Amino acid sequence: MDETAPRTHLEHLVQELWDRDRIAALPVTYARGIDRRDWDLVRSCFTPDCFIEGSRATASLDEYLTHLRPGVEAFPTTMHFMGNQIVEVDGDEGHVETYAVAFHWAAAQAGADDPANLVVGVRYQDSVVRTGDGWRIARRHVDPDWRVGTYPET
Image (cartoon, rainbow, N blue to C red; front, side, top):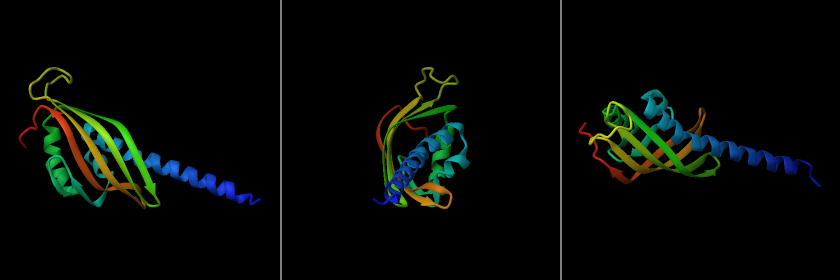
């Protein structure tokens, strides 16, 4: 019996679990950056040449953030709840689909009734790649499934 075979298999499993964890963390880190208005943290989730098909713009990362930022900052408070995820890993590439509900509070006190509040249900479809700095989103497609309220004029 080859004593190294189980160890090699175990190492492979550990690497896959680690990769899945790091991939799953990307959409959550993105949400944290959005909600804290930490645009450097948001940017760190993506490759520099990432292409995003978003709910409000389809563009390069820089162009997308140029459109996204004023829309987010129009609300005093946002909170993204990241839910179900499916993560797939294939070597140095992968995919993660994440369901999210994004709360955008227009009222000075988060949670207070305001006709300008916006709640959006989306699915982030992220193609990811392993880089020298870890896993990053190389392409994002946002599926806006539903919303309550209207997007602000930006």
